[in-house]
Length: 297
Ligand code: AMP
Image (cartoon, rainbow, N blue to C red; front, side):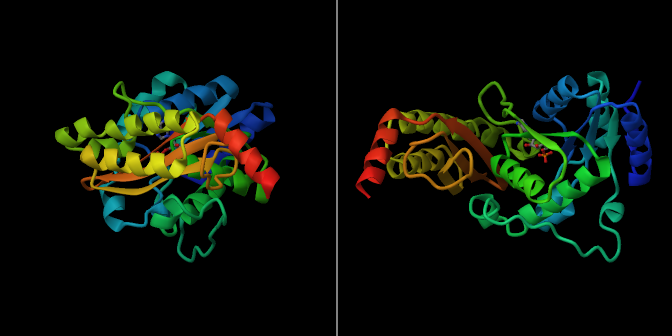
């Protein structure tokens, strides 16, 4: 049997009301469709933790800062529904843009601090769009749990912050990045890569993991990141938008891996912008250096 596709919030609410009456735990997995194994891993994680799972499919115009990117974004609703059916997700909620943003829509949810820098610096308005639509989806579904990928690490922080700040009663669950066999992070945008670009693409995660090892061994971020940029460009990438070491728990910029950290990158390969990140375990020597510096200050 196929997965039911729900278009309106009224219909969605009446279904969720019955689940709630029966005391069932509800999870939501927000997506923009063109589903791949990364998305499906979130759905499986949600099915393991909740009684009912709503997958949302909405290519959110408010979070695109480039009209060309919005137009080119893959839309494969039928295939998405086919992929979801065997997993056992309960509903595919795929509202129309005109219902999500009706005439006169005038509200923006804007999260400061964690939205600034990284993607926030290069995609003006992007996280306002994300925060606004995610808030709407949380309120519309009334879910107890929401599943997000670490692939979009800054987005995860933005969502966690808004849930805390607005007292939205939902638990955010983070899931690890799913990768292709050659290490490339799965992304709906990967289909845009030419055969040649696709071959070069895994050099990005390769550079990230090599750099993470060096940082964990105590190397200073400035040196490691400068060399990694060169490696990524030499591999055929056209531009490294940013490559930064940030603290895992609050995204603050770091000069060394003196606490659990993330190496976060955005880079252009031809006309495709790819983002990725890897965990950087804190290095003993960087921690010692940090302690010595703070003791001396
Ligand atoms: P998107 O459809 O790209 O907006 O992504 C929807 C959700 O899937 C977000 O929470 C993403 O972080 C997550 N996601 C996207 N790619 C991956 C991946 N390769 N591994 C795990 N989660 C992912």
